[in-house]
Image (cartoon, rainbow, N blue to C red):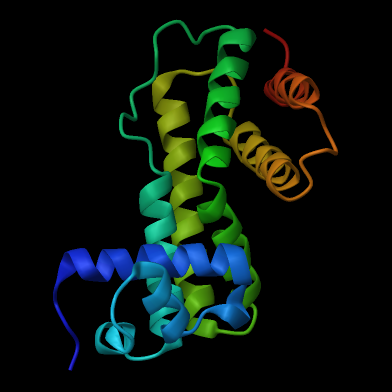
Length: 189
């Protein structure tokens, strides 16, 4: 029997994200999720049929929590520096949800072994990329679809460095790298 208390389910999935970030995919057990969510032992098994379902729902939840509350662009993004500032804010917002991004990295690794998780993550990432490209092009920001995809790839790896090996680049170096990525990928004004 699958339970339908949506608040408890969300708490369990959020607990799964924390466990994934801290202990990796091997540490993601129903017992660990119950403990992280602060619910009685055995609760997670009432909400998820198996670990695959828990992995899949955790992946979807990370993306929900990474979405900005307000997806409107601030005015005045016609120049490269304003655009670079927007990208710095984006990297900062994503890096602020450290456990979510680390959990997402674990989920990506686990997706190489779990076809259903791979399908869900591939669909979600593809939709995210397509949505970012469409939003970018509709907003009149400088650069084309390829530039958007290159920025996504470059900034994702910068976020990985920041979260996993934070001393590789100083904060000032990270900000300068974002500025240069925008200038070099978007092209001349």
